[in-house]
Amino acid sequence: MIRWALVSIAAVTISGSASAQTAMQRGDYLVNSILTCGNCHTPRGPGGVFDMSKQLSGGPQTWDTPTYRVKGANVTPDPDTGIGKWSDAEIKRSLQEGVRPNGTPVAPIMPYGFYKIMTPADLDAIVAYLKSVPAVKNEVQMPTYKAAMHVDVPPGAERPMNPADMNDPVKRGFYLVTIGHCLGCHTPEVNHRRDWNSLGKGGEEFKGPWGVAVARNITSHREKGIGAWTDAEIKAAITQGKRKDGSPLKPPMGYGLYAKMTDQDLNAVVAYLRTVPAKE
Image (cartoon, rainbow, N blue to C red):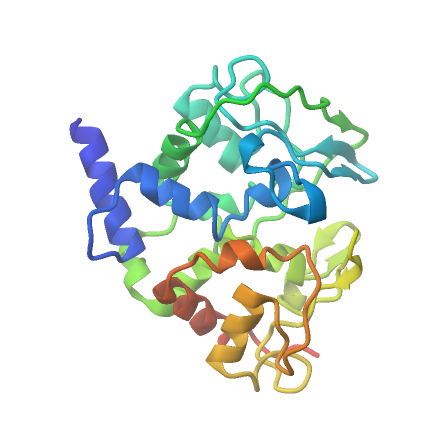
C-alpha cells in the first residue's frame, strides 16, 4: 500500500494535476494520449476507427523492413496470447530495453529507445493501466528478424528524467515529445539510423490507406518549419490535424489521441518545439 501511495503521489507531481490522480489514471492518460499505443496495438474497424472491444489486442498493420517483419503485439493481460504472465519488471524491461521475458528482442518499430527517459512513476503507471484493461485472446503472428537491428535513442533521453524537471515547461515538453516518439517520425533516416543532426527536419514517408504522408518540418524555421506558426496553430495541427492554412494533415499522426492531452502538456510541447534549431 505504501509503495502504491508513493507512486500515486509521484504521478500527481509529474502530471501537474491539482486533483488526486492514481497510477492507473496516469497510465490511462499516457497510453491513450501522448504514447498513442492504440495506433499500433489496437485493431481498427470500418473507416479505420479503433475497435475498442479489442483494445490493445494487436494492431492491423504489419511492418516489413530490411531487418524485421512484425505486427503490433497483443499487450492485454491475456495469459496465453498477451502479457498476462509477464511480471511488472518484465513489462518495464520490454518498454525500455526491448527484450521479452524469453530473451527475444522487440522490433524497434516499438520505440523503446525513446522510453529510456521515462520516470519510474510513469513506468509504474503504464504497467498498472495495462494490467487493468480487459484481457483479449488474440494470437498475433510472431516477429521475423532478418538482420541486426539498430535502436535509436534521442540525444538527452538516455536516462530517466528527473521528476523535478517537469516544472520547467521546456524540459517537460522535451519529455513528452520524447515519450511520444514525435521526433522518431519527424527526423530523417540515413542508412536506417536517425540523423540527429537533422532533428525535426521531416521528410520521412508513411504509406497507408491515406496514400503517402510526408512528415513535415517541425523545427523553428520560419519558412520551412513551424517558426511562424502561433501556439494555437501548432496545437490545432497536433490535436485536430490542421495545417496553418486550415487544410487537413494526413495520418498516421494520432490527432484524436493527442486531443486528450491537457492544456498544460500541450503548452509544454509547444514550448519545447520552439527551441528545436531551425533546419531547411
